[in-house]
Length: 264
Image 1 (cartoon, rainbow, N blue to C red):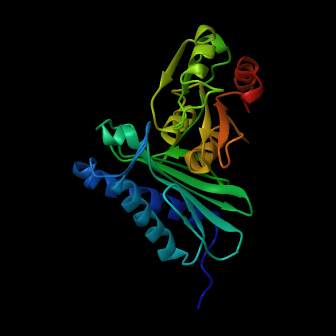
Image 2: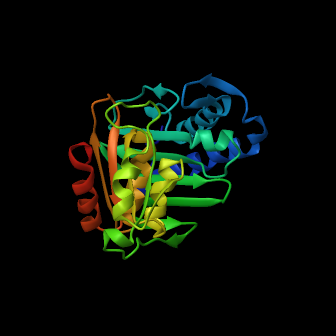
Image 3: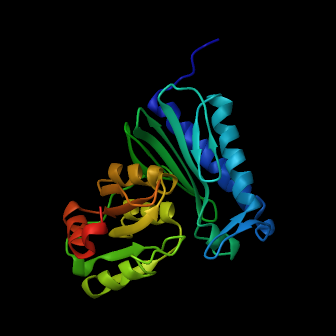
């Protein structure tokens, strides 16, 4: 039996194929978006979340059978070869549920703890964002570059709210703290796709707490390969992170100064 090709280029190709497969399944079946698997006070899990993850895992295991997968819907244990796939089959599920087209599928792969390739696919727009440690960030083959914004007062900021309410960080607290100091604050509702807008140059800063690795793994690498700043830090809730991404490090530092101890 031949050894699978684990070059970075091949890993990126599998990220691309898996993200596209998951996203296209959800898009084809979106008439079923009201099929709820589980409902929470401020969130919803759909049957299509589970189906899309199954589709992505199938695409990965077709090439690399037995590799472990850290997914939003479930985790797949596998070989201890230092390779782990990280995926979010539908990021922005609430948007998808309500028929808002701002959602995506995200797949990344890390080798010995370092993310080396990742892809984010936005099916409603047919936008495929991708990057690896060997290649620049691209969207549909076009190389991406972050914006040149340097002043916080000129910055467009995107943030979000945690799925579970946190008494120490009330909903929209980040937006309220930053709003007087920036051009505008927006909440779009799909962290991976939001982060990719920093790489594109449309958004200057993204910051949010309560995120999971599958929300940020692929998009964080895409930002870095587009020339931007990206950092995450564990918070008190297990498996959750605070994230700050910006087109330039000085903007990230300015955001940290305003957000204080809970920021990255």
